[in-house]
Amino acid sequence: MKPERVPLEASVALYLAAWIPYFALNRGLASVVHPALGRPMTGLEILPASLLFLTAFTYLFLFAGGWWKLAPRTRIGPIDLPRPAPWTALAGVGAAGLLLTVPLSVTFKGVSIPFVQLLMRGDVLIIAPLVDLLTGRRVRWWSWIALGLVALALVVTVKQRGGLNLPALAIGAVAAYGVGYLVRLMAMSKVSKTGREGSVKRYYVEEQLVATPFATAVLALLAVFGHGPQAEQLRWGFQHALSSTAAPWLACAAAIAFIQSVLAASILLDPRENAFCVALERSGSILGGLAATYVLWLTLHQPAPTPAELIGAGLLALALVLLALAPRLAARRQEWRRAPAQVQAE
Image (cartoon, rainbow, N blue to C red; front, side, top):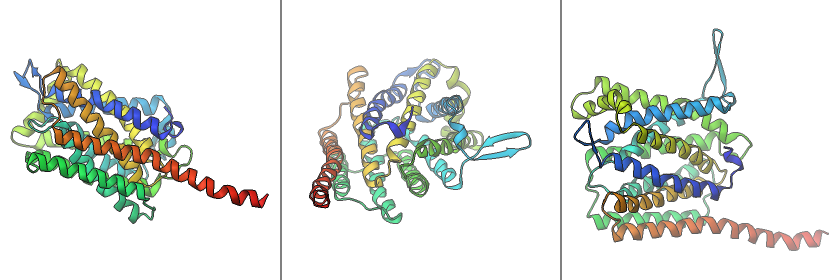
């Protein structure tokens, strides 16, 4: 897979499609009774095995595909090891927060997938133009309008729900997700949004050298040293999930998450402003979540999206169309303006 050679719109379309089975698998595991537990798995029981599978798939790809050779090297005795640069190491820590919160976010009872996706994606869309301003990138008018549409979608759905009304762990997941993306976008803007050949691959390798091991280590420490039911759920996830009947489904979800990580990097590292790239990436995941909700409604009789969630999705679709068309129209307008000048020069 060569992300820098894939058109941005194609990456967004594939990214959107990948979210549908990913959300459906994680929500299904948290909704169907697990034989060994006598109840559905919780998000904390799902998370350890998901991360272990994702780490295995990611590292297998990096080494089998030869991408690891793009990273800087450190020699320890006779061993030559790849290492991340400081900024990409920081981005890897931010990405670890996403790995911990995304699968967890879709497993909360009484919290619909479209609603939690609007919350998690909405805060990032607010962060994106701030990162652009801090890093000196111009934010074009269509990106501001798209952000306004996403903000309106968020207001409509929160108002219909009567407020957030979320479990404490869900609020923590939303907050950690926003912080993780702030760190990640700052690092991306510093080192990799250049459009140069190989920059997406190199960034992805260096970030992933940190992200999955760091996230897994954090969960392992919480499982070993934590107390209470949440730590017990993590311990069960590490000790039993990989050998349970849920393992094949967890592996499938992790494989999809790996594909998503490559596509997301190709979208977010496009050299255009963060407000543009992030809005495209966020819209793809939210619309994918909406589609997954309908799949779960048809297969597991989960609640269908509410009218407010459909309105929110419609506003996001409008933002996506704007972001797809406006840059092309602006580029064509520039070509029309340059054409008379070129004729006169000749």
